[in-house]
Image (cartoon, one colour):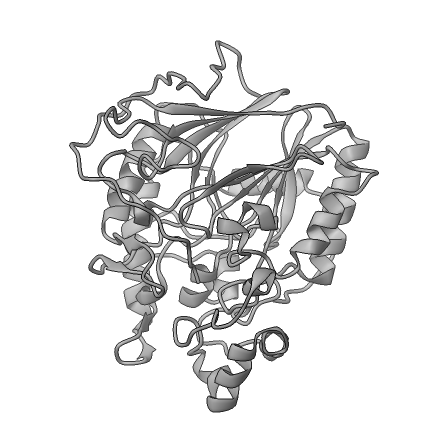
Length: 428
């Protein structure tokens, strides 16, 4: 991992900065249980995909998001819209690593929320659990991920990372019993947002969507008062809760404790505790990074746990949207650099997303959560291959309703499915 970090540090476009700174989804139908199909390293295209032939990609990576493991029984989320199979996420992670190991990957990505809030907090007793419990649950995941042939893991910051660990721990790397692989969400310079040259003509940008967040500092560090005031300004439910619970800054008992969305309409739904924003400093860095990439004739792929386009959110509700999404979209869609950013890959929205902006040609992809996986498919996970003219996702979805990898429930996949995203020149 240090090898990758040194490479990232050498090639990153950096700006000096200091630190500023849960998951909810629309209903998802569930497939009936079936025998698990065997994995294969060969990918056949379905009717909606395009085969890549024998071309070699500029770079290749494995992709997972929102494993969100805890040693807990299956249960529905806070809104009752989805069944979460917490322990089964380890089975999905094992199959993902097995699949990744059939390819020569340049790096592997887990796009936020590796363990669940329940690893840190006991909602029944309304108190924090021992720190050791969270480390044990993290260890169960990391023991699996450490079996990957490719040792270069890129972990992005999600809200559940900050429920379980301090930001400083995530900067230095969180260790867990019996593991050499640490959960480290920063690069070699300790930066949570950075960029690096991933292959000829391609730059990867990693965002920190919780640079502005009530949980910016992480577990048991106290809520960020400025972010709490920002939420109170935009969400009357938060305002009322804080008035009734004035000790919330110290107790951190906000996520999962009251109805955030009551009487909230439209994109105002993004103003909830489990979301966050980039902040002015990171926005300025993103603008300069994209300008420099455009000037160098580089295409850009972005990783962010939070979604950054309203139309890519479930039912366009904005519930999984970055607080200051409009500012980063303004940069992506700016006339001077339009067409430079080709794809944004997110997590957070557990049922996933797949949407393309007609104006800019940018693809907005959200990887599905293993918590929603049913036995009809091995996934969700993917190998992603990046070429000059297309980005190809090869893998498996959570069930037949997968947006990335849909299939006929009468014929569940026995081999990876393909989803090809066409990449045009800088003029979409």
